[in-house]
Length: 213
Image: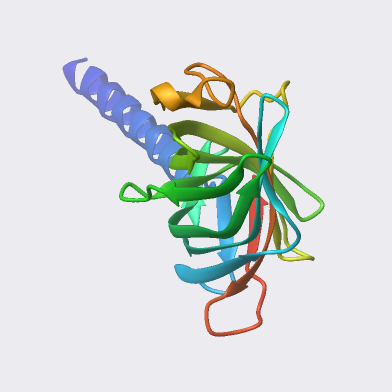
């Protein structure tokens, strides 16, 4: 009788181990959702604006003729809110406003993030995170921080940043000097619009970002 119980216990233990092993193997065989950067990962990309770059605040457009940036892109796992790249540095030039010349400076000591949320037909929708910049016009100096909605199109190789009043991701005026009355005030939400042509640095190849669920 004891031997019978022992044989049953051994058989049950073996069966449980087999079930556990099978489950583990099945889980291991399932690939995690992935945002794949091409043609290689990691890669360094160069971005140059096309058209006018605009930061609008209180209905006042602050415009720049050009903007350029360097980005580091890398394949990453996850479904949404996944950082697939960083931006540092970023510059603007030829900037003006109805009040006169504007001097904007991007603070990328902590690189800005390129965050992916959704993917459809070769277009990644997400946002640029950790934005921090200082702008000076006349006697006004103010800082802007926050996030900007963005899309990236694999076919055109264009990164489009476009915030609206209804955007979930917003920029906010964090500080403003005494000379900013009528130009900028703490708590206001500037709107940023820009389109960048992106290529793998040193080439004419457009990077791709593809989501595999």
